[in-house]
Length: 239
Image (cartoon, rainbow, N blue to C red; front, side):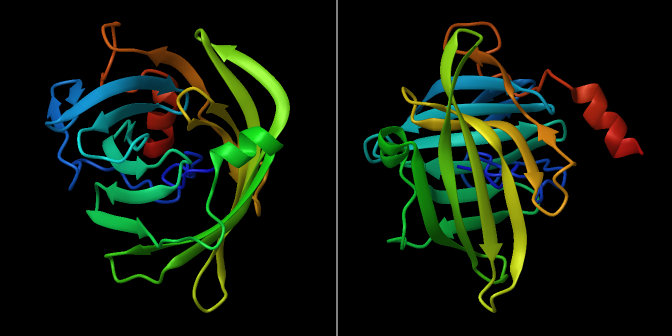
């Protein structure tokens, strides 16, 4: 599914990307270019992607089984932290700048389900997120589909997916229509970024395809600095 921090990202878009400088609420600590999960949590995976993005994954004591935390760093610094469950539902999302929290309303009319997607090659979802910014709730409806393609990136076996979704406000206004192609890891039960675009401007594609999968003990694990396409991103900021 998309992740609307760069999307959703877990499947994601970049519409909230405003140059985050400080990570709020979830408590991770920065140490120069390194990054550490909060106390009581254990780092699982770092993914360096195109579009000058790096993702970190960790788990925490006391969380439900298969719940995971996923953080996104941009060229400007930390962007957000999202807590997801085994089906990749966005339970909680903490944005860095400006500080904000989004929460998924449960139960959802049609929960996102990695289990259904892997079993049936297609999954629909319909859920609502509320926020503490005083802004209207957003209803997110869409689908994920396995395209039948399989790829290995940096030794990591992934399945290719495609997605599309609408974001609807309480008055019925569609505020955003996203689509794209991304990747899913059945072993991690996570989506990873790929290509995404606004359905109204489908020729303007953001490519955040993974480049490196880095595990504990390997060089670059929990490095907070994105590595790929950053010169292009920086030049875009300066134009």
